[in-house]
Length: 430
Image 1: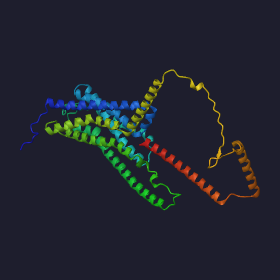
Image 2: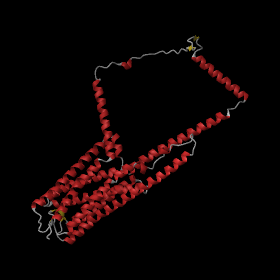
Image 3: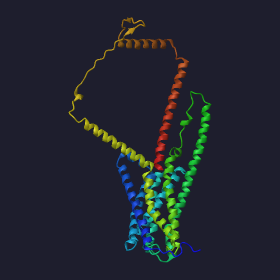
Image 4: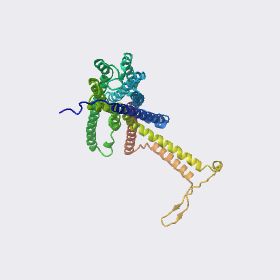
């Protein structure tokens, strides 16, 4: 039985569908990335909302989003103009921003492992993420540009690797693009699995520790007991949702890179689009390359840090609007009430009354009573000093207990402040 793909020829209409899918999806992705970057810029302008974005992974993601915006625009231009001298430059920009985005998103996954598992300060490592990503991207894209490997691709009728020699083309594509995409994909998978195992392990160990603490607390007296449900949790457990949400960036990169690598290898090994299956794979590859910017833009837009920052910015804007409307509504002639001084004299009278309603004559004034109390107290102290009477043992014990409780409360407050600061520092590093 003959195959359904036998005798298939890539028509101009099919090729136009492929190029339009590649170009339009790329432009949509680039536009979404630009929109998200504008939102991030608006949030950063306000100090109250800016603090929510103070996170290493978010800053790295923002730079990757900028690279994806340029990638989407250049990719769309390459899809609309598959021929000409500009094709070489467009492919180089596409490859440069593609590699830069891939390396930066891998750094997001790497930063999670370094901070959570190895306890390395992510803020100190941030500059190395940028330096290494830019250096590798330049080192991988400049040599094929100098060797004139970028240009019009006759196999796919688009701007891509231009060599007509299949062996040379595959060698350049594997060494400068596919191999590094595979390395980053494997690295993202390893780091994601390591972080997930670390969090599950800490959750189990913390659960056992809380169980032991609850059993220990149950044997204590009520006066010295501690609420076991309020025991401090490790930062990894406190920010478990945030960590898993951050891990979606490299996870999405892993899925997209795996698909594009498989499609690129198939297109490079095969001798052009000569079957219906090859055409479907070409469309899938075009959609993945064009739609990767859409995926990253949507992930960034739904990031918890950006959502909290936008909520804060909206609340501040609404408060300013309400204050302005209140000032406008009360904008009539104002009386200067602040210049009017009112002096109020208060007299304190003591009323003594029995249960049957009979009033007793007032005693001496409060001042005389205070003076009398002070004199009586001084007399009693003098008598006590003269007689050599000491404090009661029970009063001394109660005073010691009170001081001990105050000391414990101050220690607990200090520990709570240290844990709060530790959580803030941890959140900035991830």
